[in-house]
Image (cartoon, rainbow, N blue to C red; front, side):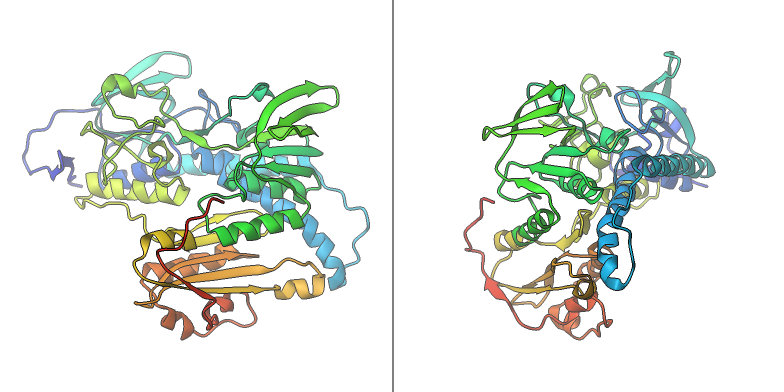
Length: 495
């Protein structure tokens, strides 16, 4: 197959002399984005190599695995634990549906952990086969950039070998960040949390983002006592404030002790467990302390400074709209660029990279209308603008439609936990600007809503769509009455 490649932003011309390289593309990092970019580039006819650190469920500077964070120690194993945690409350709810559940229901953490590990080992093998079937050469070891067209591979036995490549793609993802507090070595990150030998009876979590609220739900669902400490008044900074309040209410309703406007100042090891000190003078005793205070781009060992690749103040790789660095032959995608750190976004960026460099079709990633979900229990899912973003970015007025209701399932189970839905509509054009939902099955519902928003759907089109009855999803097409109207001069919140 003939290959078309970008040379300094322009497609190469037939017959043009090109230097000889070992590979057309060498990818450092075999996570979701790197695997997608390498496979699709190979499908366009490129000769592709990819390198990745050896597999380990707990990642480190010298261990990783084909599949990357999401598949091996992120989204996938976490979702398995979320499923496991949901069964506890479901068994409670089952009693009012006629199921005679014994008073004492035992949970076997080690059995679930074993099943989780089996699954990620299986997925690691699948990703390796995907690369092999696409004709991509996989190297196991640590890759570092030693020139604009040269990658040095440190093999498992410590020996080094260099390969030349017309293009180099950095796809090394990110790593959990630890706060600098006394005793921080006593804490764990999400990597270790997914592989704990024993289920903690008492857990303290520092952080208010995805990982923090998800693990709070997981451990609480499995019967642990959980204290969640976060710096703001509400968790999930950056999401719609109204929906953040719903999540906080649900977490508290499920028995999680919330500590807003709180951070940790010191951890101490004692015979009774880890003594956790907060900035409010509180002392909490825990078996496990999880720090979920953000992630940092994985650039430390890549030698990028020496080659001249520009990094930002977070040490993320700086790229243009096509994922190209300031060095024309070096590109970067995924969390290592710290743009929008979601696995499906890394997949999109990998696809666009392959089209641009080897497909003869320069393609910019489109970051509009990207849906996402927080898999707390029950989950939150959103697409498009939050109310705060609409206030800041939309000229004119925005109509807000909200619905809060008791899910049909809860009417029998007796669980007092409402689902909340929200639509934001441009009052002038009738275009739907954003949608949010917190409640059972929210991510499954929001994926379909995302298609509608991507297509530019209007509120009138939502209203003219026939709902599926009885379902929670039908509420999105039956919200007829405007809850309120906001304009761009609404005061900003400090939550």
